[in-house]
Image (cartoon, rainbow, N blue to C red):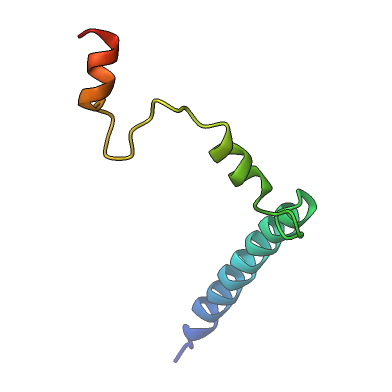
Length: 72
């Protein structure tokens, strides 16, 4: 009788090792790019400050006051 458990166990451990390597790669890459420092959310706040003032949070449809200003 043959034992077929070993190949599946080795494949599972190889898959876990591969997932760990990918997770560590992206962790160190994000750490190197500065996403874990004190100013990690600086890009988000800069984007919010430089946002388009005509953007309406209720959707892409302009409000009635914006339509009146544009003369539509």
